[in-house]
Image (tube, rainbow over the protein chains, first blue to last red):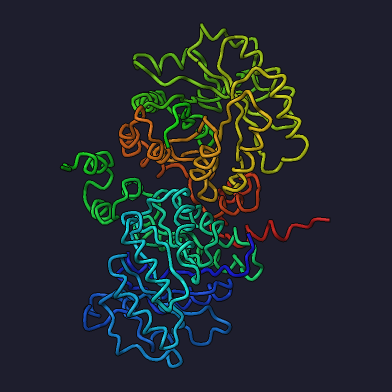
Length: 316
Length: 316
């Protein structure tokens, strides 16, 4: 598959940060940045832009806050580097502290939102756009939220929002390729002036194939992470995505080195990937939190009881 | 997805046997059989029907030979059990030793063949059919072999072969869903009186999504293994496939127990799954043997050199 418009966004440090409290050291982040840049990856999402007034910097690593000066330090000296993206959650950003894009090392700000919060998201995104940033709006948990609220949110984005890109996000790793086909077509039918992006989770080993399906249906912004790192089951792996894309600007070899040297050892210390409770959460279209709690308990391998905790739930 | 005609064939012991010289003990195989039967899985492929005159029984476990008496012992006492399948390779079976189906615990014999050996395969399969067995023909390595030989093989199967089922096999884990869509349609256009099956390998985390794609395109016989066990990257996982299929006859819970108790510990002793050299072999459409050799060497984590061993190969 070669379509020049396709952009690859690596969210290794941002999504991976959800399993280590955003506590990657600067040398590690710098090596990831250099490898991604050599590989020709278009964007590197380096963390969250949360306000240190709302979260205690002693409890979290630097990539929960993404101070401009820290970012400058880790990307300094890398020529022809990937563009830098950060993620912003609604209500957690000190908007006054966001400089003009021209004064910041950040190129893109991505706003994560639920469909019901779309009005707040649009206000934020438009302000980032006015400050000169590229922006995206990432609508989360769509597998739970496909009714009239989503429809209205998409129409508002098309009509009121300055962003160029709207992401379909499979937060729970619940979608099969037939869902992706339907949803990308649906997004495109409303968002006639926007690009579509896709962010998958790998609970059911479908993040990569769903990413391919989104590409086939015309999405052009694809998220991935090195060795699939990310919360719970993790994400679409960057190395498989680059292997699939035929654009000669991408080079898989720096990513292979990075995995050999840094991510195989890291995987021995922190857990992500194909693990049965995360797969069950995906099948059940559930948030992975219960599965993550299970994995930190003595019952971590009691899969049947975990499965039955969903099927035996009382519903009236 | 609920289509009554869909059959699930578990090949845990057969394909998993390729990584431990077929040396599962009888208690283990019995527990797998009981769990699959409780889960409603249609077939269990229990091993290869190789002649002990051609392979030394001291070097391999019992599931390389699948003696009828050994099979009877491990399935004895399980009521309403899965049907038993065995695999036969061309030129490795003592045909005279194959009893009539009515005298054997085996219900199905699957013949694995390359397209170029289809004449030999058809002679074998027809003989098994005449002895009363259900049969399938599994054409291997189709990702390397899609020219006129495959076309001729499919026509011969339709016209000369008594089998009911022809399998598309992604031996190298090289196919994307667009290939599966094309090939299942192509197989169906020629094999008008046969059912189509699919057997995937998980080198690129696509075995499950390719299985779904084959189902969407009308294939009805789907191979899977418990926890994805199998040579190199392994196979489509049975638990995800059962989670996807909506036929109420399947029950995932016995499989979850089996994984908790037997396959998580087994995975700590023998290696299969998403491992970068296997992924590279899949991307390159190569047999996994070189990657398996690498994993048994001191260079096991040197992914870049392994990748470059393919891209720097001289071709004139």
